[in-house]
Image (tube, rainbow, N blue to C red; front, side):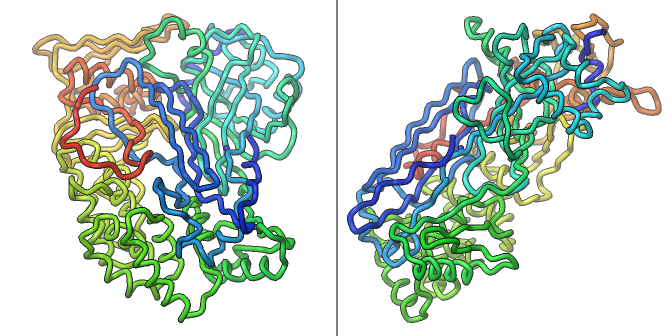
Length: 628
């Protein structure tokens, strides 16, 4: 049977739970901080974060970012994997804080905050001669069965060809792979996950570049079960094009790199991940009291909390917090067990006094204010104009969550102030504000800021809000999203490397200019233009078959070029080519070349974790360097 080549496919598109902590004096302990970061994916380098919560509630964060072979400005959006449950670096003792005493967090801790690894065996197609006919017998039967079950999700890949799973597995253009992801704590149905894909060890697969993973079910991995079929409930499902680092220059690591890749946002959680609170000292009376307090604060058709034993309270994430599960977990532990008005009024004043001090858990205090509800707004309004930046910011952050428009104005001041150590946190808070019209106005104003980091941070939040200032187009059936941001001073191209395949063009008049000469490393794409030419000439080649398209003209407009490259291969009714079926990875590589070669009048900006988001507020150091 003929190997499936690129033409056949051009129409496509945290292990286990955290250990139970030991009790501390008085039988009280709360786990109040955890961070999620992507596993080492090999895409644009990697970053790893190590988190530990000590008995004194100190946080240690170590991160390393490796971005080999990239030129141009490298800045980024907020880290979406961050889970901030309120513990901060500092010398304050949480147990002595008014933000800890009498809260749910003082008598409970979370079970299952760690990431849950899930895994499955899948099939990557579209590899030409780089695949393998090998399939270990121990996974063959399960893989065939799964492919028949998920056939509805993969039929579009093979078009009208009736190719059985058995034929696909035995084709040289396919490869059996191990698919892995990590489901974060309290993840809800529909959440998107990063996926890592690796060629099954011992097979003859040469490369996964340009391949597409067919629908693959992911289940919890049992210890010692790697060499056999994976059984159990399906928790997530993965599908999508393989993305590899297009800038890797180190030949010594090329073999490993070619056999692995990532699917950005390529898995979908298919069922809610259970989360529960555990009482440090079992008592059904206290379990009932905790349950009732949570349900009072988060009323829902289905109870948010359910006391299933004297030790356990099961939690269900309310609809309004889906997508913001980390904040919900934080807020639950910051609820006071008493909702007596007099108690709450007194505690609000205590929180205000404590917030003014430097070495207190400011983030947790803000969450406690939010937990108190509308009754806390009178005290918060007194704190907004404080000359102390941390008091003003955390009070406004709590007020904004409670729907106070004045708080939005205060946060807008922090977001616009280059000297504010909370600038990026304020931008993020404005993006998450609901029902606050001024938040969008403030964020749009930041698109003209002189700092590209601020522009990108504002853009990311405007995308979350669905703001019309960002013009969005889906390129290809399932290739990538292309955004245009016209309210921008400096022209640059921003490329995502996590969560989803997304490119943003900042500024007006982004164009290429002759002379142009670019040929992709695999020979699949060639762009040329001589001095004085009226158009760019594009050639599309299928390396597996050697077939080459006729010359295709496209204007110098960068948006039109990106859309031509990324759209599904095809022509319109007039015979004009409207798409070449070039994958996201190859489009990113071409854009990087055009920008760094100064063929395009824009800089290349690659997403990178923002230090201000990973490490918290940092003192301003003036305008950042624009090059690595």
